[in-house]
Amino acid sequence: GSMEVQDEALKQPNLSRVLSHRTLATKSKVDAAREKFKQVTQNLIDEANISLQYFESHYEKFTTSLQASPVEKKKEIGQREEWIEEMNLQMERVQSTLGHLIKGPAHKAKTKIEEKKEKVEKKKSGARKLLTRLLFGWV
Image 1 (tube, rainbow, N blue to C red):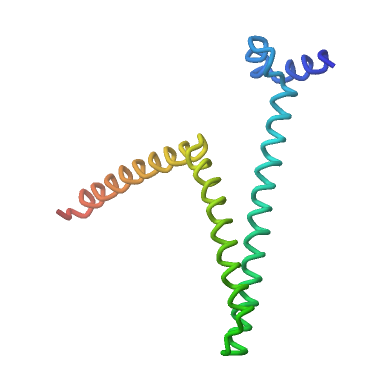
Image 2: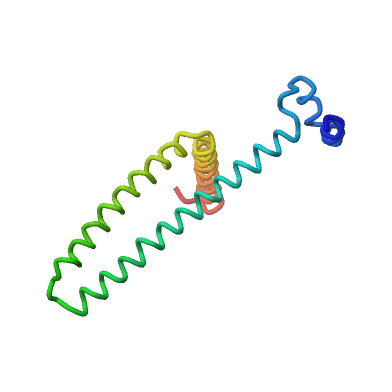
């Protein structure tokens, strides 16, 4: 019950101070939210892979039948057109999800980290060039 949650929080001194101010964010709630997020994100990755494999397997089937017989069958043309429509619809959904992720905090943080790395690299590169010029007397 609630005693277990308090004991858990006390084991984590950095969390216990925060948790004493906000009773809503108990360690169990934090853990539950994290687990749910990890599961949902993994499901997204799994479903994306299933979708990719589905459309790829159909693509293989189409290219094989196109190579085997140059004579176009109306049924096969219809199947390919349906496949393209399905794939475009799925792609719109995927792009919508991607759009939300790109606007999220993780993507913004990643971008900031990459920008910082680039600045550090430029400084290092500049320092190396300067050192080389000083050591070897190149202008």
